[in-house]
Length: 129
Image 1 (tube, rainbow, N blue to C red):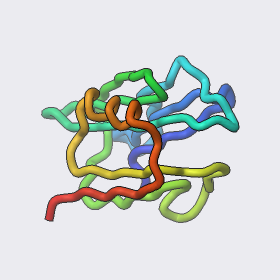
Image 2: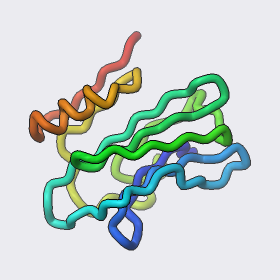
Image 3: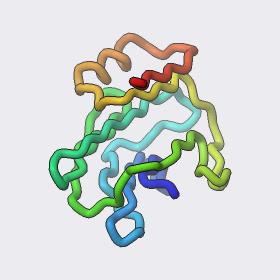
Image 4: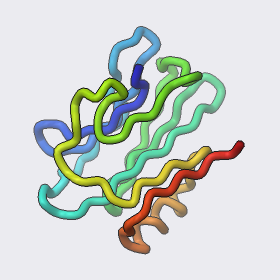
C-alpha cells in the first residue's frame, strides 16, 4: 500500500498526498506554481513525524510549501515506488533525473543547496544500517 504520493493534477500543479487514518487519500500540499511541461523542473519533498503529527514540505523549483496532519497511516513496513505505484499502476510519462533518498528529513537549506547546485545524472540512496 502506498502512503505518500506526489503527482501533477489537471492544472499541472504538484500535489503531495498521504493516506489518512481511515485509508483514504488526503491532499496535504498543493503548489501554487504550475509545472512547466517539457522543461526541467526540480521537485522534492521531506517528511517527519513529531509526536502524533506528520509534517511535510514540498519543493518545486525555488519554492517551498508546507503542510501537516494528525490523520495519517502508520509508515511501518511500507515499500517505496518511483514513477508509479508499487503494483506498477499509474506509470510516469516523463523522465526522472538525480533521484535521491535519505533516512532523515533534509533541512530546507540542504534541499535548496541541491536545487541551486544544478541537476545531476545520478541516483543516490543513503540509509543507515
